[in-house]
Amino acid sequence: MNNSDASAMSWDEWDEANDPRPEVTEFDRVVEASLSRRGFLSGLVAFGSGAAALGTGLLNGTSAQAQDAARFAFKPVPISTDGTVHVPEGYTWQSMVSWGDALFSDAEPFDPENGVTHTSATRVFGENTDGMELFLVGNRQIIAVNHEYTNNKVNLPDTHVEGKAGSAQDAQLLRNLQGVAVIEVAEGEDGWAVVVDSPYNRRITQDTVINLTGPAAGSDLLKTVSDPQGMTARGTMNNCGAGKTPWGTYLTCEENFNGYFGSTDETLERTPEQMRYGVGLTGRYGYENFEERFDISKDPNEPNTQGWVVEIDPTDPESVPNKRTALGRFKHENAACAIAPDGRVAVYMGDDERGEFLYKYVSDDVYVPGGDTSTLLDNGTLYVAKFLENGSGQWLPLTPETTDMAMDEILVFARIAASKVGATTMDRPEWVAVSPNEVAAYCALTNNKNRGIKTNAGGDETPVGGPNPRAENRYGQIVRWYPANEDHTDPAFTWDLYVMAGNPEKHDDVYSGSRNVTAGNMFNSPDGMAIDSTGLIWIQTDGDFSNEGDFEGMGNNQMLAGDPATGEIQRFMTGPYGSEVTGLCWSADKRTMFVGIQHPDAGFPGEGLPRSTIVAIKRNDNALVG
Ligand code: FEO
Ligand code: CA
Ligand code: CA
Ligand code: CA
Image: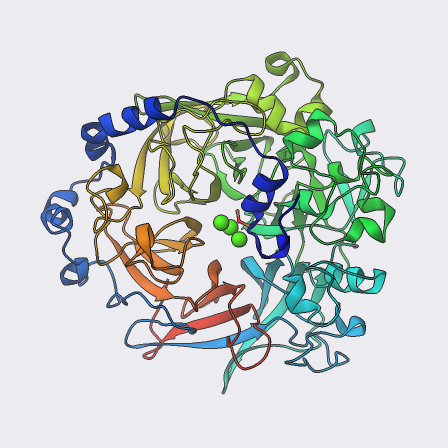
């Protein structure tokens, strides 16, 4: 790769530069097809009976602010372009915990100029906060939260070498600041804070030993130098979104794990499987220069131990986490659980890469409250979604019969299995959110500039259509599906689009967005999502924050709330310049909302190095916020 500043690239830009895909020549055809869908699209975003009352104002592009009284308890905020957080009138926010804050009193204080010391890196809050969930142990509130990756120039301000670790000690520091944190939090006179030295506080890093469980455990594909039996992995990597099981464990999802591996043998021929997963010869961190397990010329199966969903018991700091191989290996965004009427468990999961797929796991056994849950995520069937133009769809099972692959191969190389059954290539599936109030689920399809232009990494075409209706999609959309028979384990579903993001000030075609997108609420690149107990959909963005060109009028990344019934969407919060807003959970009493601010620019939350931070948001009257 010849880009001189790989550390500044987004994960998808980096993948693209490492593995450029051939251009196909049908550009004109797909643009034409997209535009001819305009009539179809205006009907595609279908809402319930409330839509009629809402329609006129939205279609005219006027602000939705006049209509906020009924469904939204807040007055929407305008876009921002500055370096701080903004919340509606009547709400306040505070920083709760930032990168480098002590979880244990033996940690050295954070140094605003130099960051975290090598000796304290496992004793503090890691970098780049992402997915999180709250758990209760008696009255104690425990948050499990991901530390997705490290900004190496921020962590190693004086010693990084072109954005990578230049020594084994620095590589260790980076590994220790990623993974997962489990923190006890409490609200005191000065607001929310971590309970330093709580017995529940814990860091799980890129070196923590983790069990491999399920059908692929012990497979030849998972046998490594460190574990020739293939029953354990070292560490969890690029933990992006998250999930919570009905039985109170945390699911952390390994996304862009490929970027941690490289090869000291520059002539190594990569396997087709390594290429499908973007495992390359040059890692983003320099780890391969210091530790053989990150060197695919020395330990070729080590990357196969990453890319899983990991189940963690946040209530037991001694528990060993489990990588659940039955849920498949890909670039996992999050994991959203649902219980079927018969008690079986469904887990929805997106694979966040251009043209990759949307998956569902269904357990063989039923969940019984208080019963044994230890193998519910080990014995089951993995499915992948196929969306049809007529608004229906099917979950296609990935089995030896449907794929002509062995079960361990299906799980370790789930992308390849999914390609074989003809799954629908998607516009980068990010978070899935399951509604608590109706049998429905939503997935944020963040964007896909290659839609209709290039194949995915497996050579599958990415035609314009279905839930991915726009060529060169830079704005993103949210697809929603309703399982047949009101059963999340049913293989059939119907679908529609909840919203297509766009810019109605810049475009009058499909890129203006669906009718619930207005000049007053526009955004791009939906990513994080959660549905609160009242049924509102919270949408977090990780997109273009330039506020220029196609993105003019959108400002910094933000969090919005949507009404599932009417489609109405209003902006609740804006993040500081440079950041994405990612990760959302609520306090036990639902009077505080915890929101993650990842990779802000310098100046947030204070002077010195920029620090990713969880903020706590409350109403001034202490009323419910979710
Ligand atoms: Fe880590 Fe797909 O976001
Ligand atoms: Ca994300
Ligand atoms: Ca994203
Ligand atoms: Ca991200």
